[in-house]
Each structure stands twice: as C-alpha cells, then as structure tokens.
Image (cartoon, rainbow, N blue to C red; front, side, top):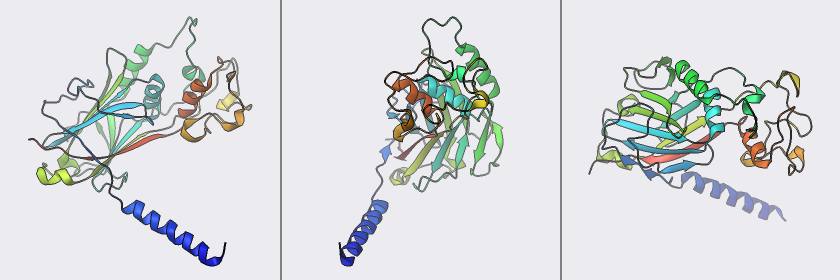
Length: 292
C-alpha cells in the first residue's frame, strides 16, 4: 500500500467519524401524563412500561405533563436489585442531547459496605437458611431517605430529603411480585423552564442511567480466599469480557466454577456474578409530549 492510499484511507475514516457525530439522534416521543401522579414507589399510574434496557435489566417508561417529567423503572431481576441497593443508582438529564452528566439525582446512595460473598452466591434449592429479602428491603427503605442533587437550578449540590419541597421527589418500593419500583418526579423548572409548550416537543433531551459497580465482597471465613481477594483459578471475578461475559482466563466453564465453598455456578450464573462488579449504563434520547 503506497503513501497516497494510506492518506486516502485516513481521510475516509475522518469523514465517517464526522458524519456519525453530526447525524441526527434517534429520539422517542414520550407519553403525555394525563393521570395525576403520586410518588409512592408504585407503578399504578404507568400501565405501559414501554422500554427495556438489557444493560440494566430494567423495564421503564417516561412521561410528562406541562410542568413535570416523570420516570418509572421496574426491576424484576434480583441480582440487579441487590446491585442497586448496595452500589446506588444515578439518573442524569441533559437538555442539549449530549449525554453529559451535569444535572442529576443520585438515589439510592451507595451503601458503602462490602457485601459478603454468601449474599451473592446462586440460590441452592435444599438450603435451609435463605436470605430474608423482606427484612433486607425494609432495612434498605429505612436507610434511604436522602438523595444527592447535582446541577439543578436553585437547589444546592447537596443531600436533600427524597420528598423535598423543591418538587423533586423520588421513591423506591417493591410490588406484590417482588419487583423493585423506582419512581421520580422532576419539575421542568428545576432544570429547563417553568412549563413546556408545543415548541418544546421538537427538542431532544437525553436520559442517562448508571447503576454503579459493587465493591469486591469479603469471602466467607469458612472457606475461599481471605480479605475479599478473587479466586486464582480463572483471574479476577470483576474482569469480565465484553457484554459482561465471564473472564476469559477461566477456560471452559461448561462444568461450572466454584468460588471458595460456594456452589458451582454455570455460565449464566457466572455472568450474573461478574456483572455485579461492573458499572451498568444505558442512554436514551427523547422528546417531550404535549396535550392534544
């Protein structure tokens, strides 16, 4: 390949990069929220969970009325629930559709405590003592009564109550099917303008969701590696391959892998375990609705 051809290839790559950056973003038109909303951690006001994120294993929907943006997430996956409870979750809104994390709510806040490896192990059908999920959920709700504000108008970048008088309200609870429900109401006046009109429906906003990675847990005292150190037979648990796949150094996992004295895990269980130590993120571009 001569020098001219090399320059031509570089020019083509640069042009493709510029075109990709300048191409219009695909944005979903969200729903008009006609029914009054009470932020209570219940999904009754949102009969249609329109979207699903494979990265965070969330069903979710967005809606708005003239003065507020509403978010509702339903998390069925128990491992993702545990991850949110321990490591925390972030909701970011960008009014310029650039996916920047400058205006956001950090809730729930990270627990700050390392989980015990036994809390993360796959369920065993004949196990006599299983984690008391009801107790864990109640303890979590009692502790999580503050949220961290970042970048909102006339609101300090500080911890405030989840039912603050600013109008920004969030709530988490569990429904009868043991799904975690995350509900939030954010006034447009806190990040955009007092109220929206038809002209605002052409504007693209960006929603970014981060579920943080949990800290490497301490291993049980009765087996495994001490001090929370990962197993040595297949590399660190937290270094998964693309898409949250198990570590490549582990070889064939067809027969399952065993962490300390934990039960052997199949490929899917190992993938779920690995994803706990990785940050989960999804980004959505959306346009507002207007009452017809």
